[in-house]
Amino acid sequence: MGQPLNRVDLPRAMGLALVEAGRAIAHDDVPIGAVVLAPDGSPVARAHNERELTGDPTAHAEVLAIRRAAEATAQWRLEDHTLVVTLEPCTMCAGALVLARIGHVVFGAYDPKAGAIASLWDVVRDSRLNHRAAVTGGIREAECGALLRDFFAGHRGPGADAGADHS
Image (cartoon, rainbow, N blue to C red; front, side, top):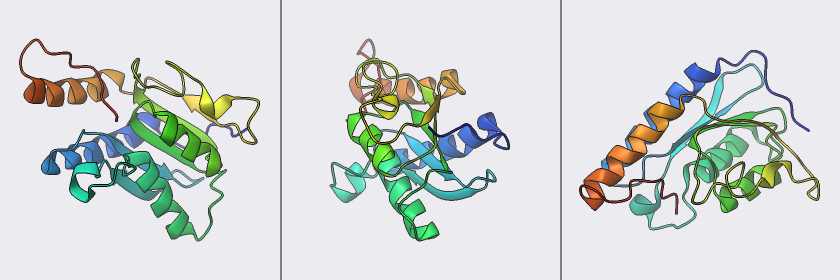
């Protein structure tokens, strides 16, 4: 099982992911951002949701960040890396994290509707799979949740359910 990285300042790293999340708003996508960190804590890859921009339903921040990290490191096994994301990953993204052998997953807001790491399922720590990651949730949770609530309030109108909508 992957272990949390001692050299990573998680609140600062989440700040990088929050900046990425804000970039998704420019193309009217759900503001979710992700950063992959090297073992020393330096950023290897960054991404935000690009589903609206690309028309690709799999263009979630986590998947794009993993792809970019694999390209940057010239390896698909990222077991010594940390993925930091503003919202608890969905099942697709959690599966991609397992396949990429990510060692540590850090997320901000919990997703009670689609979360696949803590809320509904625990895909990345399932003992039946060939890889398990360390998990840290709730980092800068209030900020990550507020970004999503504000985005959805603007899209759904006052009084609408402002919960996370990852998919």
